[in-house]
Length: 153
Image (cartoon, rainbow, N blue to C red; front, side, top):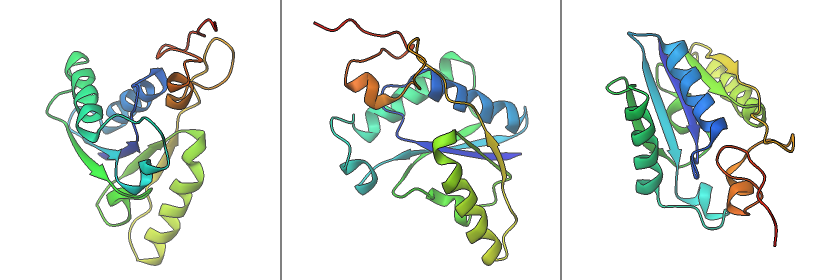
């Protein structure tokens, strides 16, 4: 099975790790996972995001640690769709915040006569304050990558 995921993957956190592990689980032993890492205009609106190369290396290091090597391709994506509109993927793994985009991808694929992607949604991973973990919260030093709240001065 060919599975795709996408994200900024800045401050690789528990939510990202769940997304990645679910993608490999769905792809299966013989499957392949496309990992789109956002860059260009799509991240220009965000502040203090690490470079594409840094974020890619962090994801590769995690994949190596989890022994998920050789079954993936990491490429930059420049918009919310990446290659999902035209590539031969079977499934897309998403979080609740990207459900609308996945549904939009399927609408566009249908209009173009392409097969629909199976949409598999993982839940938000909550920090210990019961608010979803996010890279922006980590950048703002509200929480760490594991979702532990940080003490304020």
